Length: 419
Image (tube, rainbow, N blue to C red; front, side, top):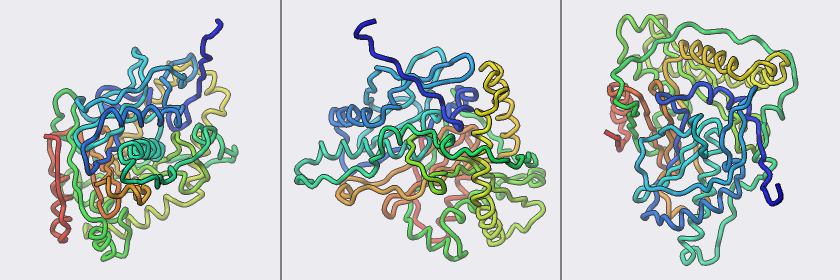
């Protein structure tokens, strides 16, 4: 029809395929990045910034559609609208019966929040979107303060690079080693909160202080806090529970190991395991073993194997021909089996950077995700590290142990929660 805009579609990347099949009201597969500013958010300027940002990230104009054999992203004319925060954190974004965008932008007082459905992007891609949004907001709000000294946006990939499926780019078809199912892991139990709401507990602290504690054990911040999370779980386990290993699922940003500017998903997960029933319960021994596990799991060969395994499914002629309804059932079963081997999850986004000109306008960043089990997410900006626990349970003993242990090390922690 004359004048009708051509609809474009994009296949989901390989890491994204599991999310539509396994997301629901209890496990929305939504995560949030937030930035706390030094002054109150101006909604009109934030909307202008979003209108500009969505043009820079065309994939974010997409809705998720269900085909006969695959899910796919379809371009949409829906305009994203900035809203004042009013929904539960990480509320459901994708519902098969509704045609909606896969992200939302909120504000509340000094805070700007971006929530994203994981099928659209991973943490790195979402952070690039948020940083671009903030850049567009700051150049509008602080024209006089910047005095024409507008810094360049940090992420300047081309549209093609942003849309790149990096799993396919780095797929070689090489022979891969078979994955081994690990032992059944210890599972944390608790009282579920009403209406599938999540408990959110955050601790803000000095990066330098945590690094000093980590250096006492000759290790990194990530290894130290991973070990502390595992130790906090152990301290709250029953004697019966200690017969099973504690296994953490840890996402890995593959862009740190393989060339990619993609704003889509390009991550894998590794498992960090420790059996307190069979090994020393001394914290120093735990740190050493966690450090060895990270070194082993982050080897180039193992990470390459992850990419090959994920991408191989799409190159399998039989898999391609299987109708989506059966693929969904298979993915749900695989997800169930995988979850049997996981106690909790931990994700460290790392250091968030912004142009120095914007430092006077920003207090801190934080990140957290929907969770069917207790999960830790963390990121830092300047000297502020924010560690966020999300959990479907009302109990908070593990979180209490974690933050009290840091406080006993002399680290000043400011704790907040969504009670």
